[in-house]
Length: 369
Length: 101
Image (cartoon, rainbow over all chains, first blue to last red; front, side):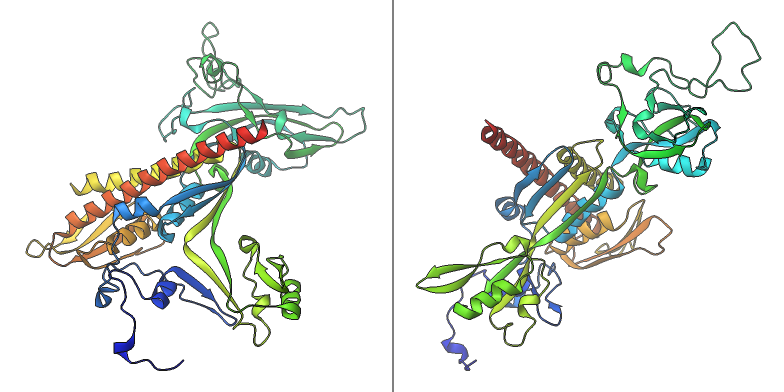
């Protein structure tokens, strides 16, 4: 690059970074050997020497922040969060995975289990079955609480494989039957005391759950089709499963998402015009088909699908290509994906996650004042 | 819980129980973006103890006021994210409904 005297440099507009610093601040450079400029520059006075303010102003944030929904159905969701810092996007992701409550089976009372699956393995498998119910309708059960209709859901599983049939039978998750009245098993100590009053069971429901308006025409079910065990001829499983509310950091079975992740938007820039043979070479190099060829008198390569770029760097591997193609990531553009397990739709999960972060801030504020 | 001195309130360490990187890293971001903050950082003293220490040193203002304001900022950011997100979901559902017809 030719040397330019300082006084010949063009005047920069006030409160704006010079282009190369702006690029370093907002992009990760994916070079052939290693990515550079991966850090985020948070400090408000980072560019004070240049007369540029790096502090956060909420009106600026409000102006620049955008959400774009790409895909949405009952289970999955993909959306773009534009104009937010990684630390906050990561907070949402962490909350989604480990701090949003759901209901999951915690206690299994086994009356009879003659299958080859051991009781503890069976209980573990049952625990992981997602229960399709809104956890906001239930309370947490603390150590001294008795299980009642506000903090527990009870399921029954009774499955038998007849000896005569000679076939093996598969027990699925949808064989779990919801018991809106609570446990049917009588506590052993209570059974002999007096026979007149209703015998005490493992739960103390004061009313039936299906009398609640939310469950009246909407019985609680679990995700169907999950294999729980297989029974040989003459084997039987009879048990009750008690589900309670919990969060993912205690055990992954309470996580409301299969997983949730984000990636920064890939940016593919052609630094020079790539034409004819080189264009065909470039299209062939890319395993995910990012490039296309347009015909403008000559054949010229274009970046048609930058979003599908995985930054595998195959296109810049050969010598000489790094000068032609630049691979970058946009630091404040997140492609966020949520895969729900079915308890709540993904868009509700995200708003709940944001609410939890708000609650955390509020807690700190009240603690400080 | 705050650890600091009465003479100089511009520097303090705040020890938050039952919190982790989720809140601490977001707060570090909003704190660093505040021009009144000279230095801030956080640490988790031991991985099996649910606790973070957030260090705030300011250019003169009381550190706990600055931390409170940063929490407020983070809350406002969250509220804006939530309303923008809800609007985007509604728009997406409306558009898709129109396309399906």
